Amino acid sequence: MIMLGLDLGDRRIGVAISDPNEVMAVPIKPIELKGAAGTKAATDEAIQAISRIVMEQRAEKIVVGLPISMSGNVSEQTKKVKRICDQMSKALPMPVVTWDERLSTSEADRALSEAGVTSRMRRNKLDSSAAAIILQGYLDSQRNFFKV
Image (tube, rainbow, N blue to C red; front, side, top):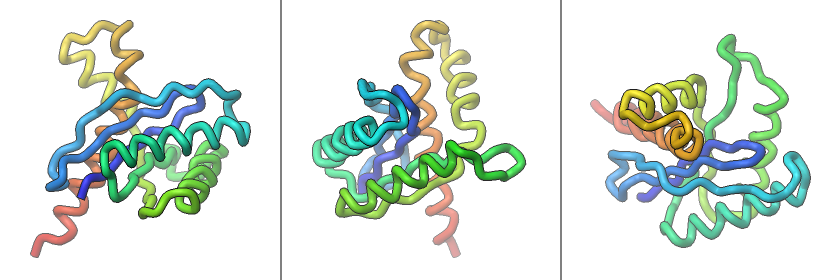
């Protein structure tokens, strides 16, 4: 099954896609949002853009990074992401699951830096690289979960 990984942001949504065998997550072009952050129009715009990618990629499941604090506390951003996930679940005919995204952005930034990507280029690749880390974590957990 092909899965879509998302790192939801106010101005940009990082996007990653899995291979059909659910082994590897690869970052793809992020979604650039034009609407004012936090508005219904911005949420609708995001869901429409996600829907297009789901159809183009033939994704069957969406994994969304859930921003939880290092202490495990729920923040306003956590609540916001959960609300958007609820709306996606209603708008799209597939499961939408959340996955702990703690440290995914810093891990993505470090990996891009180690790969020699300049700081200017990292800004353009960071969100989708974080989405790939989120999705890869989910994929790895599912393989380990079903091992006997």
